[in-house]
Image 1 (cartoon, rainbow, N blue to C red):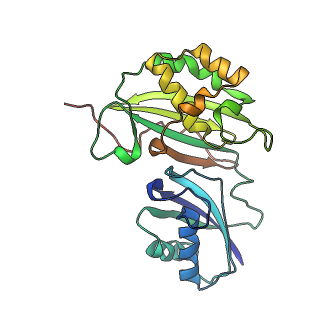
Image 2: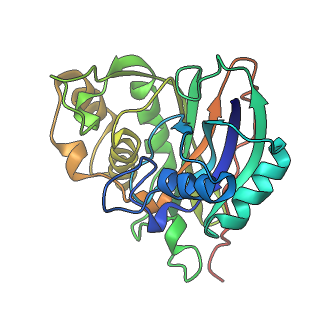
Length: 262
């Protein structure tokens, strides 16, 4: 039995998220089906580094696969890709020690959110189009309130009575690239719908309907407002999962370049 570390990308539009669910199409379910076809085995285990919500994409999700197979990693990767739908693609497969765990060993995660300033025919599945002008300066003024270890109970659909709603945001960048506004968030881990609610609140700050003081109040006192402002999943990408020794200095780039209207 070998343990493989799998790195994969996927378009989440057609899936109900990463984790296998009954009567729903999921990314983990598609990979498991491909493993069964390639290996002709059912006695394997597949674990992801974490869940992604329905409709959310991934540029480099990580999973580990325990499988008894004579196939070399790259041969396994190619064979699985032959069986996977076109919107899921294995980028890399490598043998790792049995002690490696895709979720437990992760040291951090990075998400990227793309907001479009203009209507687009081609990029709609990968952006949130906001017609209103957004003040990047105002959004950046709100950034420091999110940083550090704090309680994000107002920004998650998780029940604080059942699990901790504390998380640490290590870095949050807001930048422009052509017609896109990019929001990149690095953290220890992320709660259910946390990133999308954070982005929704930042967008309202950019519109001028909320201030950075409102952000501080939501975090300090709690509020139902972030839930009402949840950004759509279309613009959200799991960009990276970090493990011991991984570099985090990659430049901030969009998934696709979207030029300004001419």
